[in-house]
Amino acid sequence: MGPLTAIRACLVKSATFSGRASRSEFWWWTLIAEFAFAAAMVGLGICWEEDWIFGETYWPIQAYALLIWLPSTSVAVRRFHDIGLNPWPVIALVLLDLVLLAWPVDSAFLEALFYSSLFLYLLVLVVAAFPSQDRNSRYGPNPLEVTP
Image (cartoon, rainbow, N blue to C red; front, side, top):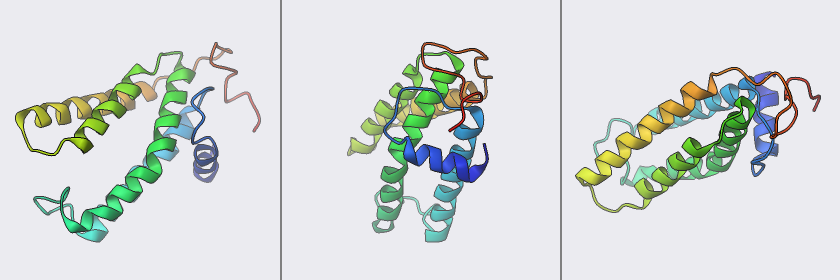
């Protein structure tokens, strides 16, 4: 699956948490979404500001994060299904990120949540690199054998 096909598939299946996603679908989506996020941060010049999270230039980043949140979560859940795993790390990551966004004060607890979120994000990325199950599973047919 190429980059444009992967982006289209992730956008079309934004609210689809059942089924499976191939490695290429997950990685193309993640690569392009993260590159766009980094480009927006650099373009807005906010990645070097100390309080960029609460700065007035942060609203475009918030809007972008909201736009990609559902498709990113969906493709990660479907990727875990493709590997044959329960997607609890993805769900835990989403819940941690929601707490981080809602927490109003800087504290040691917030810092611990941030590092926990970072750990879970890296875990999701590592697990997403695992190979797909070759056979059909309880989550559906192998996405590499199904024609869209």
